[in-house]
Length: 187
Image (spheres, rainbow, N blue to C red):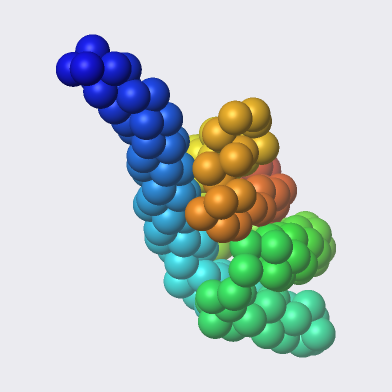
């Protein structure tokens, strides 16, 4: 009788423990995603803080490039305010990166600006920031990948579905600048 009770208890207890373990794994992965997003968001905020100074420096040399400058500031403000879904933030960030790239193309037409030490320092800071954003993005996307694998793989997908774990989106944004261009001073 005791043996039958132990076997029945094992038959019931093992699946319950498995479900609890799977649930806790999914919760842990979801928390890793939140933590890695927080790290990524910190790096994005650093970029947002650099942009007004970069635009102000460019404006001093290229004030008639008003449309490009205003577009960068508009997108920077929209990105800084966006706390919505990752897909929306990814779309806005991609637009901001495009505008920053356009701004850097405009800079190419102003040799004095390209040689300005303040501009070079800000551009260098932007590069450092981009170099910090990319690993943070990869870390976030790696956590999303692990979570999605767990949510979509059998049999853990049964637990994910039963407890309504929501799918997470990847964050995909290209860097706005990769390297500081060479500045040639007159000989």
